[in-house]
Length: 350
Image (cartoon, rainbow, N blue to C red; front, side, top):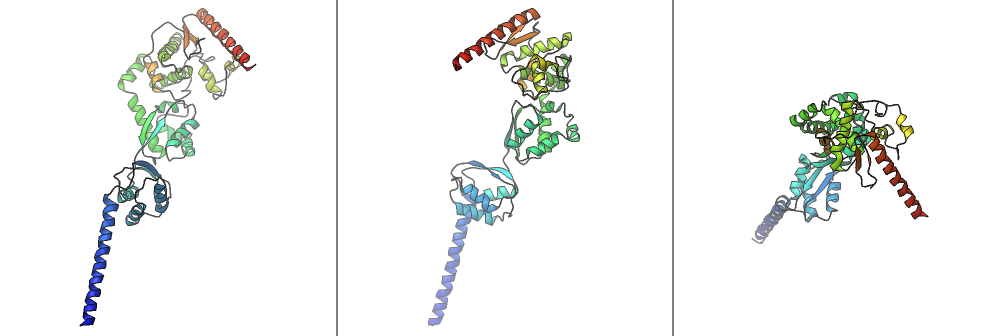
């Protein structure tokens, strides 16, 4: 009888241990899958080929993981692969360890903001802007921008490329391919050029591409928003009368924007972008024009100005003139003010 009692007690002990283990497992599962595991929300990136352990360590290092063991346990329970797929994700206070593991495993990404803000004056600058927000390498973007067949798929070439991009902030998946990125840019460009805007361009006798070319020149002339429509009006007046645009920003473009000051000798440069030598618009935009410059061309100020020069007040604005004589007077006033300013600075240094 004694041996039988011992067996019963031993059996009950095993049952009790199993029940405890089951209770612990159930308790762990509840917390792993139902309870928030973060002290505040935050974003994180899974890098290409990153291991679950490396990701867990990275998340714990933020100091916002309440129960690190729960996170590790969740990664193990969800059987994450040894090499994770890249992505950008976001967790909230209420996000559990299991939710985090499933999110990464199934690729439930959170979009990132890709901001293309001006100035963007070269293909290299555009490639760097894109890659600074996205996983795609800048070299891959640059290669696409030099691929004529790739560009042709979007109705542009190396000369008209900048007409494809409307500066804005785009919400996209961090892992988007170069093609997916440019599909989105084309969609935004097509949406921007609404029927109303196209009608305004038609009224000017211009295509949307020509509007963008002129807008890029306006952008190069001034960042003082109130006068952008006035400058656009000056150039439109010149185009209508057959005058050369004589736009300094096109000379700056020819020299790769490396000139500190444009001198008379620079005006002799042989280039189809030299608006001092050739009438009409240059072959393509000299930069990616911002929206307000495009709008300035589409809704220009109506006036009889054909000339402008920098304001001697050095406040970023310009003085406008209808005749060349007026313009020369304004230009002399600016040169005098510039000379006095330089002399004052020299006196300060000495």
